[in-house]
Length: 60
Ligand SMILES: [Zn+2]
Image (tube, rainbow, N blue to C red; front, side):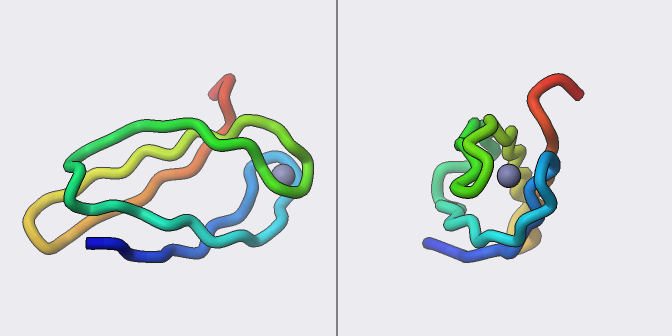
């Protein structure tokens, strides 16, 4: 199951959309910002039908 979630880049503040694969369970992954190309760390936590996306910079 795919969901989309808006987030703000922790470096440049640009708004972007993440596509989340909720069937993969809890996951942490890194994707570069499309605007400033810096590595954003995404932490996805899934609990039943509830899920939460945390976005932070790599050195936090
Ligand atoms: Zn950025």
